[in-house]
Length: 169
Image 1 (cartoon, helix red, strand yellow):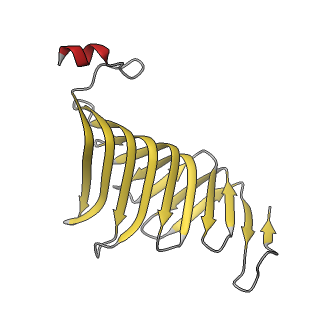
Image 2 (cartoon, one colour):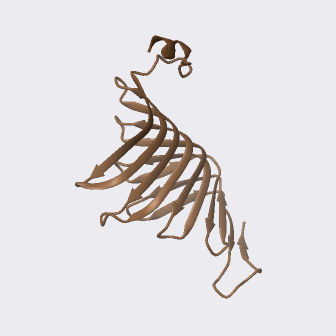
């Protein structure tokens, strides 16, 4: 164990984690139903700060009926158990099955206590029909399904259109 710890490089300005684990699963329950299932390639646990630093995240979000609504993947992440937030970073891809939408960004916060999702970096949303939206940031209320975007560029295909999109700058 000492040999392994001696080779470990801590996060910048931080102490070594209390525990490290490969192939870790972290589940979050709300109202006795699984809300979020997260599979993590490598997790570093910082018990006193109540946070988990992650490498390689794959998260699945469920509705109250136990149906999969969304998947989220990213290169890195941080689960903050104290403030009930997950930060996804590095090649973040969100697949929403209900909306037939894929969201791509470099950083995204999920506040699972408040049912909010937000970021402050560019985001691209692609619909299965080819429509797209690019924005400088977004804020979403998961429960009400209201989303606000900043500085948008939209290309929208109506059901009858093929290659002549309607654009909005």
